[in-house]
Image (cartoon, rainbow, N blue to C red):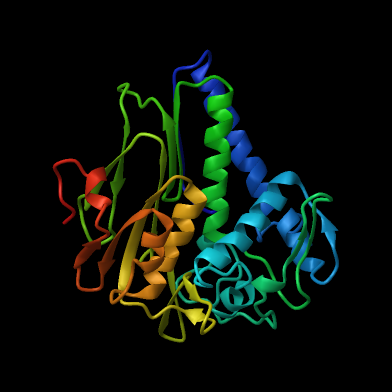
Length: 298
């Protein structure tokens, strides 16, 4: 999925076998969902835009949740920004971009509202002239699916971390809850240590996946309103929620909103969040402190 993967399995009859199973499941989901693999389901779905296509249960679940995310984020998350991503220069795996790629070319537009899903028949139809980009929601959902599968196979606990989208459930290695560090690229130490018994933590930042086109800095967080990399004054957002796919979507929505009103959607969802602006100022929702114990974010 173009990112670092960490899986911790606690207990169960064969922990190493369960960890191997988790890795294979992640690889399988990447083969289904990567827009960079020509024969993945997502690539074939994009090639078939305008024509109904039968998909796997996993891809159906991904598309359904992406549509839900578009609604509850108020359009802040849009799974059809693929064209904008390509035009920004992100037209190949990030590790192949280099520091100064050229702008890409794409005529694809947006149209999340017009994605048609027939859940009973497992059929999806993208609007003509659009492209679906799983992006971060794919990482979050993969973490949720893999964690559930490992627990169902007999583990006492599991932590799945897909590039900052973390899903934990069951017992941690010390028998208690899990501690998830929030790391900021500008800080040598974690800015917060979050305690979670069963749930998800997702962190999104504009500072890591960066490149330049013609001397102009660009990053992977596209603002659906402009079709361009966001000019937000926030550099990082972390969200704690029940599921990793929800936490991931909300983290991006927080960043896009900027420091003036970052948490309106998060508060309505029941999640909690932390945000850091370009001056290093940290804001949190009112309930975020309960995940911090005695510590304060800095």
